[in-house]
Length: 257
Ligand code: 1GP
Image (cartoon, rainbow, N blue to C red; front, side, top):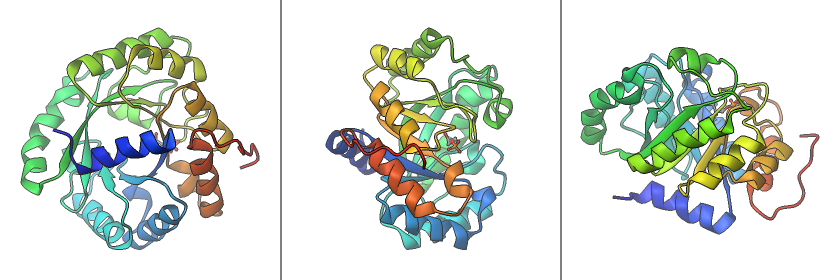
């Protein structure tokens, strides 16, 4: 059953053509700094805030961060868990994600099994997501024991994405890893998009409006960025540019941002 947050995301994708989501890593923030950034990115019209990180271990810190963010913003806060320790009762929803190209069953279905009762207990909206790691080795590929799909093998990414759709997952995520040198390439996004009709999320290494625009033109429905915000500085300018360039039909991409 589609919940409130999922419906909001789908409606917004329909309305805007594509949407931007900001990722905040609780390990790189205090509750105060995270809520300040959340306020800023909300004012720049990012569609939602994802909270998570591949090396997160402290559930109590996650609780404090999400609680503080929720106090500050109205847009949905969606958990992006690296394990069942990434579950927190203060969020609106959680990506119920399976790392499809992990070699360890724990990251494909194990952690999800142990986390599911807690998600129910907290009343979190679970949004099923097929998660696919692409590109070079990264923190997330090491932690999740994944064999990343090389950028020059788009057909492999498409096979994984199609399997996600056939499994009944309602979103699919091409993840290049936080801080990746290059985001998932156009050819890979295009090939995946030819195979699936569920919304496609692209993240990892997107730093400029131009890159966001290129991914959306290739078929991405959602662009996720994290590192550009963590680096601080011109948060509003950077996010405003990313949000504007993500919206289909917006022609003002500025390569300098
Ligand atoms: C990582 O896809 C996200 O999980 C965001 O990546 O930090 O490179 O923006 P960046």
